[in-house]
Image (cartoon, rainbow, N blue to C red):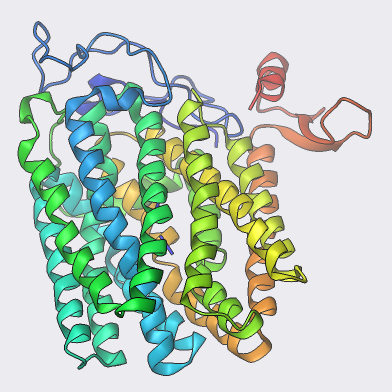
Length: 501
């Protein structure tokens, strides 16, 4: 299931970074536990917007924007984008639920559901980095127009096959793979287009609102899909999804190009893919969040497999219950996204803590003895998972050089989404062989273990060590300075530990 994560890195980007590479603040760079510094409140005018004028309703490029939960929506281009995505995302969730249920109905196999999911995300694993190179080279607005149009056509083809009664599981496999090929380019382009719409000061807020947008659609999409499947069949869900892509296409057409924070495009050249990989490898505050995203995306986000198996095998229920479970998880995800939108900064400690909570809650759900307890845990799982994803996403974007951001985010999405072709079949096989509870349990164990391991690595890079305290009123587990640390000055380490997450 998809959207939306060191010692010597580049600092948070400023508007000027759209044309010049970033330089490290100092020899030590930002704290890998605290994460990148917040974007400055004011920045230089962007190349695409004149410094002396600002269109009505658009903040002046150099003027500070007062932070709030919905501050990005003050920007006209982003409002158009968000409105289109609400419609399209609703259709996407309808198709996702209908597709999972269609495959399970045709085959009766959780492994087949896993194969469908794997085929949809296999192109991201194989070609994901090339998508980032294309995003860095091309006009993101034009590129999105092509990818969104193609995704709409794929939805309409699946609708025609299903409504005509000719659909077979092989058709679903082929169309899922085709959708994955388009997503290779669409995902990094859409992720990095956000910074062009809102500028560096609003990236965190816009990333969080994008996630809230996607998850809000999840509140409506699964419920509508469940009703349609039960009443008239899943083909109508595919038809609505195909038509829904008209909304983001209209939004792209209505945007004002002069108000975009466009930077200098990367010219064609040899070795650009390897350059992106080397860049991430040199920056631990990029590398280790991406590693954690990879583990959790591969093994922890296989909800189509687990929820269909729990619905049919454990609870002996139908599509309505499956839609309800997805609805409850979406409620928690929306709450997590809105809470993230209010935060001014992204902390590595918050990212690792949310990942650990996500894994532990999955373990609790896998062991829950009743449907009602299982359903009640869906919202907290959604909240923890979304908090982790938004924090990792915004931290990685802010710590990346704008000239590299497309390639960095393609790697981010490749490991998060592209790991599904590996984790999907494995989790599907475990679920089919040993049952739904064992499959869900395995995903939670891997997620929790990865969170602990990455937290320890980041702490060590920052010259910190974990400490346990049983005193009342204090945090039970926290990071404290290593007595023999030579990599950080005491005052810096104390600041990193005591600053609130």
